[in-house]
Length: 414
Ligand SMILES: Nc1nc2c(c(=O)[nH]1)N[C@H]1C(S)=C(S)[C@@H](COP(=O)(O)OP(=O)(O)OC[C@H]3O[C@@H](n4cnc5c(N)ncnc54)[C@H](O)[C@@H]3O)O[C@H]1N2
Ligand code: MOO
Image 1 (tube, rainbow, N blue to C red):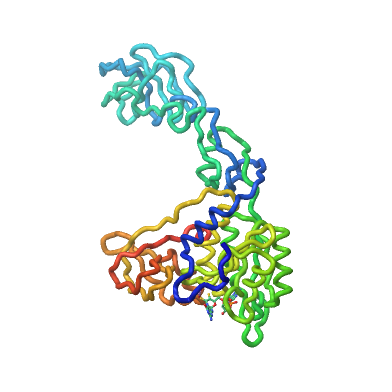
Image 2 (image 1 turned 90 degrees about the vertical axis):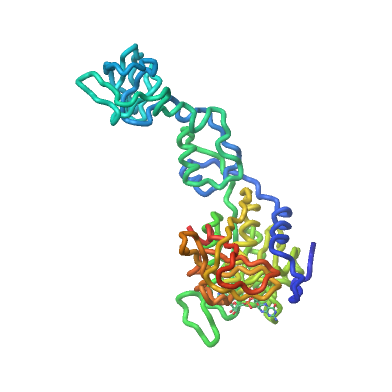
């Protein structure tokens, strides 16, 4: 599978979809799981399918505040109130003919009752009621098991647990569960021009911004991050950082030094000490990448341009790290909308332009370009809330044409 580190600039680079497919089929997920308290499972990956031993709700209960009655008493006669059922305080008797029970939302439906009438449809006179609208059988009753049935598989393995999932699990009473161990990802920036935030800049120097956007995207992906800092463009030092990352982490993500310049050492280092899987993708921004293995770790060398880092991270690294972490893949959520802006493009690479979704005249979502699309204009990422995804073969797009957009999700938006 090894290919030259630098793709052909005339268009024979591997497509992004082929690169992702190769990675996802080649990567073996890490093993290992641990048992955690329910609240600590938020954002973690479920290690096994989760079954419920109980039904939820456990009992038929009332959906409204009103009166539980026997539907067979369908004669519009007065019903006598024989007791009260509140949530957590069931009525212990059984309803007889002509009887009803004052019932509150969430209370267990008493034995003998088979419908509930809401109190707005009732006239009450002392301990008797008459209804203004006789309910149908089963009216306003939430059935036992209508949410979850005892024995059901309620969540599949490999699922990253959401707030709703925690609630669903809590409703079954389960206090602990097995989740996969978190993926450990080391990251560093490369470049002699880079200085840390808070440091003064010398001639030609810039602040290392990629390490912060990478930190943010990795953290939002739910992995354990190891920041190896800013590394100079020196092969020995870079090899040392790669060794440290491979020793302590499951994957290493770097920015810079993957193109064809004199100080771009990472492709040759990987070729020499590791295994190079591929070195160039037909996407813009983000054509030069260096992807492969270094010792036991997966290595993702992303281009240095700040927008290219974020684009390649979301499109290429994210599915690869999800696979490595043992998380089920998710399809890209793309939709077709009208563009309010003309979009410049030359055929050759799949383009990820930055856009914002807006409400069009007819209330439908449309997209506008955030403007300057240079791969060094990081503000375009900050101002955007979606990628405008243009196929490799197409040229410029006119205002009013339909384009595909991919709204940002984590790791770009919380
Ligand atoms: N002759 C060619 N030159 C370039 C090509 C090419 O195909 N042939 N591709 C261009 C493209 S596209 C990209 S993307 C870059 C990728 O180059 P590198 O990965 O080697 O990145 P660097 O040269 O190290 O940096 C590029 C750019 O980004 C700035 N940078 C780097 N790291 C950071 C950081 N941590 N924070 C902020 N900014 C950073 C760096 O100063 C450069 O301006 O190669 C093109 N060249
Ligand atoms: O691929 Mo570069 O990332 O276009 O600037």
